[in-house]
Amino acid sequence: MTDKKPIRQEQTNIAVLIDGDNMSADKLGDIISFVSIYGNPIVRRIYADWTKPAMMRWKEEAKVYSFRLVEALSYVGVKNTTDMTLVIDAMDLLHGKTVQGFCIVSSDSDYTLLAQRIREEGLLVLGYGEHKTPVALRNSCHDFRFSDKAEPILPNNNTPEYFIERDCSLFDKAFEVARKGEDTVTLSLIGGELKKLMPKYKIKRYGCKTLGQLYVKLGKYELVKVGDKGMGSAIRIKQ
Image (tube, rainbow, N blue to C red; front, side, top):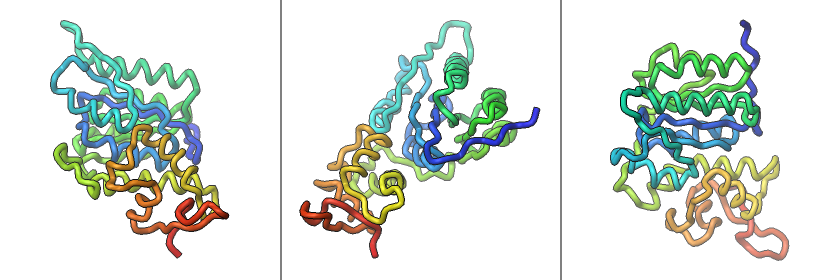
């Protein structure tokens, strides 16, 4: 069968499906940044047996990036419960035609057939995992990012500078989407886009009182005056 050409456009809706048993919780920010290059990650799910104490680290980061925790209980004598739950959901989404792309987050070769099946439907397939990920799974994706290269998010590193560096690509993404080809963008429009990318983000986490201050802190933007609203109601890239 000849593969259809994958859809790669600004409004591509993407399902991000994470195997919580095969990925570290400190990679969520990098995962969203990667997927946002290709489109809008509207479906965000993490699959795991959430009764296990080892999965507690996921929950705080899941709140920040608005991921839904999907229960995959490990029944006695049943292996790969997480894998099966993720695959079932993926097939439902595939046939529901609500998304035009998928990002499979795992280093497990068991997802190779799933990636191939999605690709055969002409949808975008992204992958995210460690260098140990089998070549077959990596080559089944249109693009695959190694988690090993992503800068780790340390659980005890809570400085504003740290969070700004971690999420700067998302701030840039919000600006680019909101500008719609214009040089100047109002902060209200940017704020709306940020809510889509990071529904639970808080300005104070970045050591700022306003969104304008935050963008100035990034170093590449400046505040501008729009009409009679006063300085700081909009931003643009530094002239």
